[in-house]
Length: 103
Image 1 (cartoon, rainbow, N blue to C red):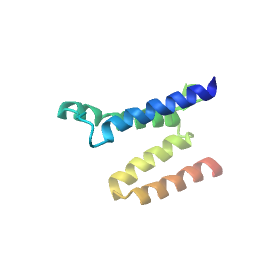
Image 2 (cartoon, one colour; image 1 turned 60 degrees about the horizontal axis):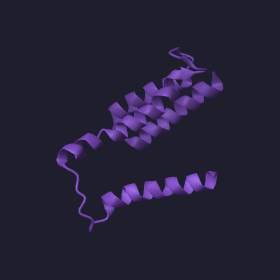
Image 3 (cartoon, rainbow, N blue to C red; image 1 turned 180 degrees about the horizontal axis):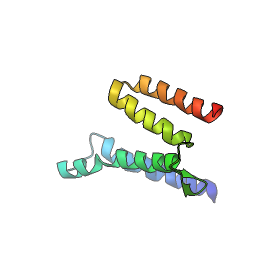
Image 4 (tube, rainbow, N blue to C red; image 1 turned 135 degrees about the vertical axis):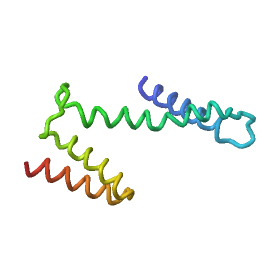
């Protein structure tokens, strides 16, 4: 049963992408729908990072001892200041490791 569900979900995922990517199919999105879909990636990423940074043991964790919060603030400041994804990633990871393993 599990294998059947996995195969069906893979087929649904493939077909939903194939309909929009195959050039000979006449399915075109309106500019309004395209604009609406441009918000989906930030929404999904926000849904991923907010619980990781702000939730500890099913409670809101806004203390200075939260390494995820400090590294998140550091990454925001680095991204704003340096505008380099690699530098931001490196500094944020180093800050996280320093806080997580040494404090």
